[in-house]
Length: 243
Image (cartoon, rainbow, N blue to C red; front, side):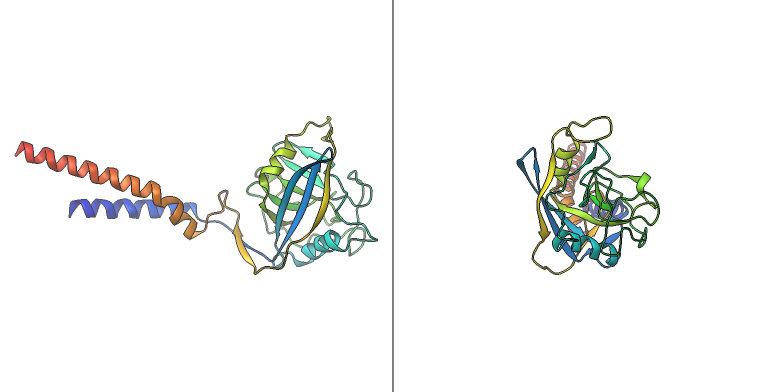
């Protein structure tokens, strides 16, 4: 009975700890965009971005329009990541001048901040670049780490769902003192992946839902329980010898 009671207490403790760690904001991904990236003409790979079309529908609509149809025939295909800051963000999306000076959207040259509800609490958040409040256009950035300094100032509208390793490769490229890459980092191709049912992601650093917590913790919990049982057995054997 003591063994089972100990195991029950142990499991309860782990559940409480994990439950506390699982607290996170959840966002629904309505569409998934892709960016095929190359560095100095050499293929790097594909970055997939989940878009939060429910929280920020106007911002997502603008991004999808530029991504797919373009404005005056200009899409993100062929544009550069013109600013790269290690351990901060990579910035791109200037379909006008390709150097960070251009701004245009389907709503005009700029459009207002839709809302600032989403915070960049981990690497991979995608947000609108701006020059101040209500100056969103076509440019965007992708975070390479949690960026609290951007919260409340930039509209976050998506998150990298695949290809975050590529983001880290990009952030490590050599740049000049202004963050301009020495090698050209270009979006070769872009678009939307085939429509799929909406799914949820969280802003937790490990993005673990309840089931993932259970599966991720199964092995360490089982090993801990086995060790606990072993100690209980050893104590029982010692007690037998003493008696």
